[in-house]
Image (tube, rainbow, N blue to C red):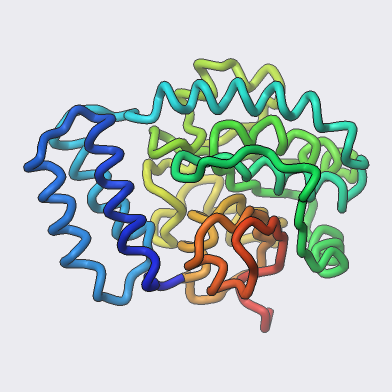
Length: 277
């Protein structure tokens, strides 16, 4: 997804927030503004611009996990909410996809919670069912935010019940409030699901040239790929085709809403990638 009109203020707001959380000064923020201004008019995705200034902030301040406190709060809130809401969703493909989409509700830049009374969900479930059936038995889930892990477990369990081997890929090092390997170790998440692997990256979303190791092998195979969240959508939609995959996310901004033809606040699951494959 290319940068859109609404992205500029969001990127500046993110830079301001991360500089503040990292203890940076006005000079660091001004450098971030220059990076945004230099890249904004070019043919780039929003995460590509964000990753450039996020790296500058890390290198300048030495703070590698500015969202640590926020992540811990989100993690506990998600754990309790997932326990409370799980029985509201059936243990079917439709039910677990809705539940994992609900898990994408929280984020550092939106002041919203988990809305089940006004839950709006749009998906082509028949196409997703076909995608699950035609996969080779392996599933690669590209994780998103820390709290989503508890909502993704139901999807993982259902896929395992269908005979799939699931790999849950998280960031190697912290970025924003994404789940990373240090979080996995800190909260002992392997006790709940052991097959957690690293993307090897510390950036928002994914770049095709960064695919490596097992993640690359699965991507280039006939495995089912499920990508959670807007950052993965914004970056993977820039790949030059190559394979189909399932995106699951909540639409949290006008730019993604415009790109998908959805409304802000809707939860959605859809097939992306190479439609000609």
